[in-house]
Length: 184
Image 1 (cartoon, helix red, strand yellow):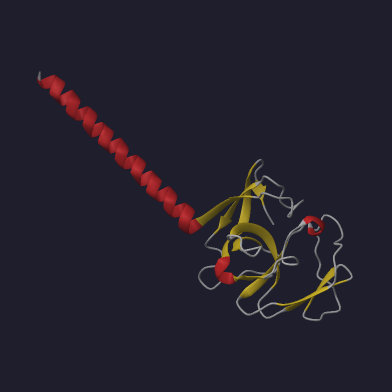
Image 2: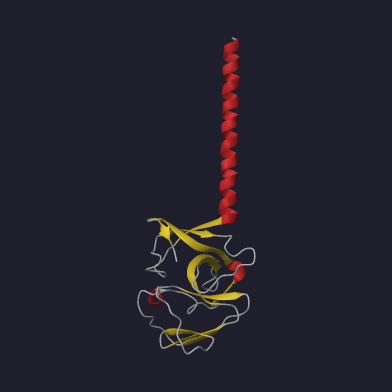
């Protein structure tokens, strides 16, 4: 009889230990997903060929903490209300305009702060075909464009083309599905 009681106690003890481990693992996973990394799926082809529709990405939430700020060319995950009356959506685009800059699109090229030399954009899959536009990026905000400019609903079309730095969730650094690889 004593052995039966001990096996029942041991079974309950073992179950309790496993429950503690599972709860600790869940708490760690929640912390990492909330404070360290951002996980997202790209729903459209607006970033092709750098990132393809359906790709799953990881971004670092720590990249822009501790005094660091987004730089031109960074690919970021951010919240934005692309259309009036619509909830904010998580989007993935490339940083083009920095706070306080002017960005001009002329003759299908991008010019920063009135420069006569267009921005070098080797990541574009094809030459951009778009109307001329002028943007004055407010302090604390960024201008985001997709790499697949001819098929990207980005700042050129948004009612509010500027993304506040506080809405930038993470800097994309890794594609984990359907293939693995660093994103830049």
